[in-house]
Image 1: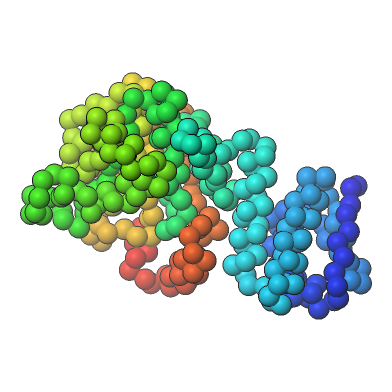
Image 2 (image 1 turned 135 degrees about the vertical axis):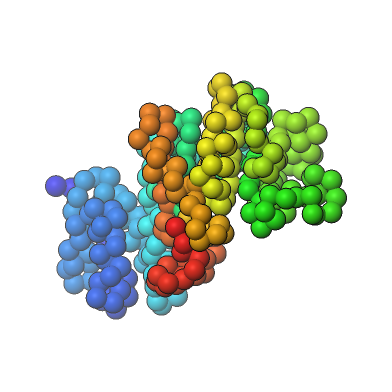
Length: 319
């Protein structure tokens, strides 16, 4: 069986790297699948060549952090493991998303994100549920741009429910663009982060990119279109059915949402939760569930999510 050895300056470094009660060591073993044996100031790795290569990369990066800071935080271990897993999947399947915009590419940063991108590539209807900050919307927008630039679709439609205003946007001042802007801002921000301002403006002026509240989708049929519904947990079952049946010829739909942040009344079922259960076994449909391990925002976002998840009585956890 292939093996490798990593040496450390002293045993204290190894103790810090392994963590209290070997918690960090267990994480590496479980995520990478490698066997680790301690011999003095060395660790010996046993496994397949791929497992050993990944383990060497993980332990080398963790050692660098320990040498630099003198300690190791659990979120740093998670970040290193997530980055390592994402790189492994990218190497195996070329998961990066080409935006065809000044050589820009978007790379999944976790194994969960890589599965999500693969699902969007291989299915026409994809549901993705996960906590804030795990890239659900950003990666969907990147895939939409990729499909548009490769002429797989002719148009991108960005949709979001306006739950806070009860879908009655007439109470807000301004024209339709001013009314829907606060609800669609996250989708537009992702778009603006990938393309320059003038390109986004041209796309919207020419109706190549359209942003629309969910209430305005009724009665439409969208052919050759990449459609993204954000905040899908805030749709009712009836609204979700209405939205999904807008799908026309050569179109794709991606529905994203966080089922722990449901703003619907307590007695109203979430359309996203219902659809993921009802449709996930249909050929051509994929349901991807991301977790706190896939959060790629500031490290505190992951810790905030974990803190709320520990409180099972929190009202934001309505499912």
